[in-house]
Length: 78
Image (cartoon, rainbow, N blue to C red):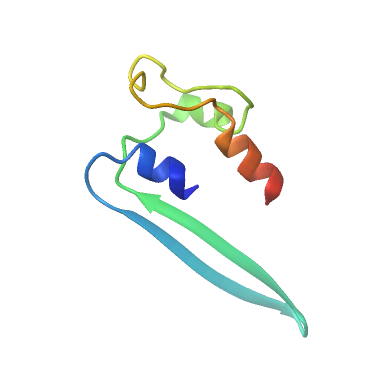
């Protein structure tokens, strides 16, 4: 997630936010979030974000390398 945020943020900042929530005596939910000031994602493209090999707005992002697998793999790992 951080790699994508940095890759698409030419100017500004990328912030990693970590937190947790206790849900039982010996169990927590780990919360991970990334915020950036990058170029953003169009509303109609958000459903494609986790599709394997899907690259969003290829014309606008033609100078950014990638296979379209990063977010799909991240989702599976999480």
